[in-house]
Amino acid sequence: MYRLVQEHPTTSVKMVFLEDKNLDMRRCNAPTLCTEVAAIFVDSESKIRTKDGIDKFVSAELPDPCTDLRLFQIVKKCMVHGPCGTININSPCMRDGQCCKSFPKQFKDDTEENVNGYPIYRRRATEPVQVGKYSIDKQMGSPYNPWLLKKFNAHINVEVCASVKSVKYLYKYVYKGHDAASVKIQKEGALDHDEILSFVEVRLAVHLPQQQPIVYQDGQEAQAIERAALRKTTLTSWFELNKNDPSAHNISYSDIPQYYMFDKSTTNWKKRQRGGQNVIGRLPVFSILDTERYYLRMLLLRKSGAISFDDILTVNGLRCIAFQQAC
Image 1 (cartoon, rainbow, N blue to C red):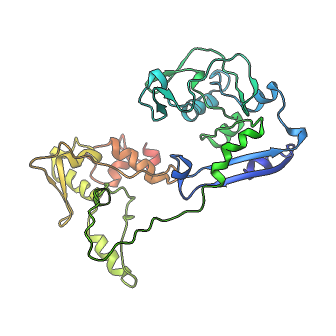
Image 2 (cartoon, one colour):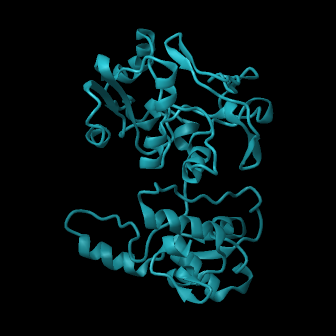
């Protein structure tokens, strides 16, 4: 927000409301690792008052790829809702056969001002474009500001607040309260079997070379490091498996639990004798800001038979210096 104001000094900003919800994204119903909700109040000279003013700063259309290919690619990647409706009835936004966010929107040749606090943005009918396996048009586009999208290359939903009614949308972000912990008091020795709390979720290790997690007690750091040097993780043990077992060469890291069982006592993968059909291998998810682990995870999902980190970094006989480069 600071950069936005600094790079547009001609806009007179009277007040900025900013709510940062980095600590608990579930409270914002946002799948991203970090997000901000902001409302910018400008003085009378800078207010958006006309349809042309709205169209100048906010668009809900897919841009012309011949005119601005980069913006078109960002909008297609970050600003397309769903898809939902008849083309995808299983979308999470669907409630009783209807999208709870009112998509798909209607086509409109011109922007309409101040309808219940928000404009109805221009969405002219054009040929649909392919997004993944779906063919979508401008009815599925979320409003955005072209400058912001090209600046940050991320999902940034921008709306023109045309009435005080629109403030109610911001209300929930202000009054969600502070972070809280759930506390339960239980009598000692009481038996209270909770199937949800008893469920154990285990994911395969994804770590960079010599950067596996180490658990230690205060004052025993050196001993913990020595133990970690001798103890294999599920990832380094997978490398060993590929060296010694040719039958594992065609199995990716995420699929290996279906055919092999990890023995924690020996830290080795052992071939299953039975019962692997219902086993699902899962890898932890990393933010793209954690660049190397993010791309290492992508490579592990696609590459099979790797015998070392260097093997993963090698592409067409050439060793890359980073996992991002190897992608």
